[in-house]
Length: 221
Image (cartoon, rainbow, N blue to C red; front, top):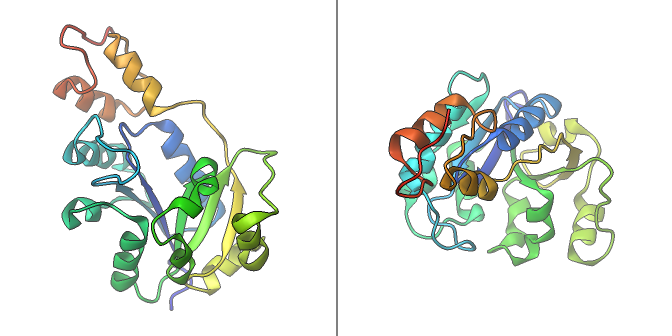
């Protein structure tokens, strides 16, 4: 095992990706000393249904968003795999590719609270660590299955995420930017400009393709 090359795994629909996603990943990259954070757009999300942008376009937006940032990597494995995109399958795929490297699945607070509804959720720690990004001041559950998970596997030591390839839980407060993909889509559909909510390269893709826009809407400069 090379403990100096842990990988952060950051999945999502990214419909579209925005600075809220990017800032969380950047803070995790630095605070947890990940060698890289892999952005993995969900190919066919099992819990959400149809996305607004198709998988290829969402990956393209992720790809341009992370370009040039050291430590950020775009990963299209869920698009290539096909079928419903379950996190456990993605983690198993990464574990097969990187058998000796630490993997840290980065999830937000809302996703963590819904973790017991995930497909084969109780197998995740057999493959990766779970890293929860939360708002400062948020109190983690201390009862129920999540409370039990934190009690048994929780750690406050970043080094624990490097010294083992999987099996620990770490909770880390990050800057929460009040940006939501839903609100961005609504803003664009209304003909307004999403500038400063996302990298200009993502905005350019949206303008070029017309995704999220009503037929008669154009983004105003």
